[in-house]
Image 1: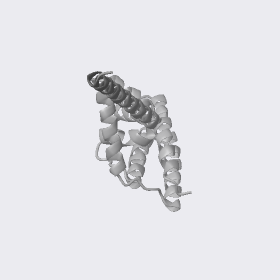
Image 2: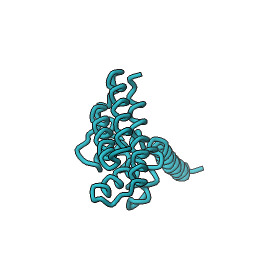
Image 3: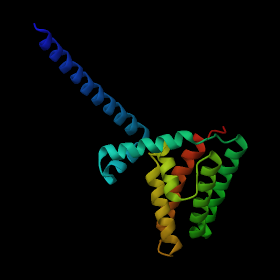
Length: 180
């Protein structure tokens, strides 16, 4: 076998190995993002320009989230939030619209105490999606109903649904926050 043929074979083998390694890296990254973001991964892919662009966006979220100082709650803070939630639920009987607003504020306060930025809703979604992708759709639904309630366009049943949605995220943030 000539030296030229041997070099050509080696170059082809190296190129094949590079392609395989790149494919494996992309597959591993995709699997990691799917596991970490849950349903939020599919939502990002569907609403993005391409799968790679969506994955880049999710990776950026992950990097931003990792830079946050998310902290657990003290036992006293955990108990205080649990009691505050009970009061909000009790308030629903007499003032459902106000209870939903209070639930929104309570969830935002809990996020803030845990270390999540809370300046605007999109930012909240972005940061919550990294660890709470499974419950993020609940938060979106609750937020939408709250906005409709602010315009006096939500029924009592919709307000009840918003409370259930808020409760799902609230419980996850509270339990993930420790304190017990």
